[in-house]
Length: 335
Image (cartoon, rainbow, N blue to C red; front, side):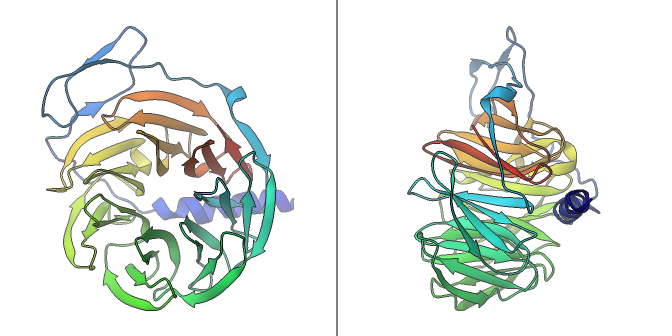
């Protein structure tokens, strides 16, 4: 009975990010890209800058290719460090778990209340949604400090240079912290910011889940623009100066121009398009509603769809493959 209650709770908490999203018109210039069969060939360029012909790999559902590692307690976010370790937040227990490159649990650490976001760099940062704090840990798991996020409901984190950016979903702000945890700045964005990404020019992109929009900030925090996207933007991944945004209720990933913010391409993925990550030269999106991960190229070519655990929310990648936090089955899938 307890497991059933926990499963329901994690879905209400995590999927509640997308509730109340309304339909927004997409830019007329967006080119739709959908998976092709073995003998279909896609002609044209997602950017419109030229014409290419590429043969798409068929989608797959190879369940044997994913190894599930049971964790329990609501894994909702995941990040990979440069040492090959993978860090997973356990929402219900207030803990952070470290997995080695082979998937074995190599450490468990107490953080704040309801941790829902994690980022890895020279150190590990955790967003504690329940107590409006962030926790900083060393790569060895030692807790180096816990600091106020500067907003309400820290949900997602981004390490960019010497700074840590925090998306605060309840105060509709993004805050910028120093490496020592000091508040550098607070910036108003759209309603319920839930994801962050930095492009190659150093700009910060924010997914505003309830506004059906993304906001672009300069590295200094100045507002560059806010742009309409699909329903329930949930994940972000930069591709040069452009950015991919997953639209939860549309089962779609949009590619936005870094120059204008308009949609210049879209990729059809699975139901409930959620967290995103880069994977070598390719990109990943967790499909929360179809229990899968879709892999696609920077040009929008779908390379495959792999079945994982139930209700995957976030995905991360390192030299050992990619890793998926499955909120519904309380597991991590390693591909």
